Image 1: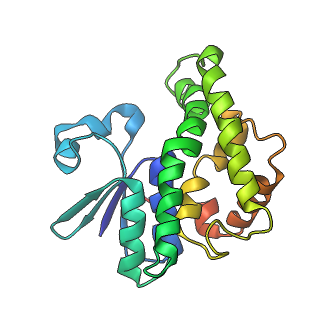
Image 2: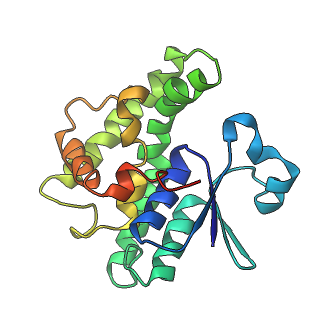
Length: 203
């Protein structure tokens, strides 16, 4: 298997899961900041021009959440469960994409990505995302109270998805004040070497 990645948010999830499961994956780095995800060669892998992309034989799979689920199945793991937890995991994946990480990503873009390409952050562009992030962050914070992980206290792809922006919290200036449960939960995620250093063994 080949996993095409860049050192940005969504590939981080897929790389972390691949590393956590210790799968035989060849990591292929794509420099998204130099336009390598927009070359004709890469667009044949993913017409959307985005990473990650998983190539497993003749199969090409895009979208980080789908890749995480596929890797779990490939390893015979239960990060993507096939029991009663599956619907809850799916619910949190969808909630995250529509709400939590969606608005957190605005902070990542303004305060992490734009400086990388020589552009200035626009604080005004974060006024609306700030309100949404605080609102949905409170939902997640309340849900995590007394829990080790997001769904039934067992690690799942939902944890990898929901935590995607948190390693960049300081640089992105995420407004995490008062969200002690989110911070505690992410500290537990950081106990996983694969989460702390998802790109460490990628060449």
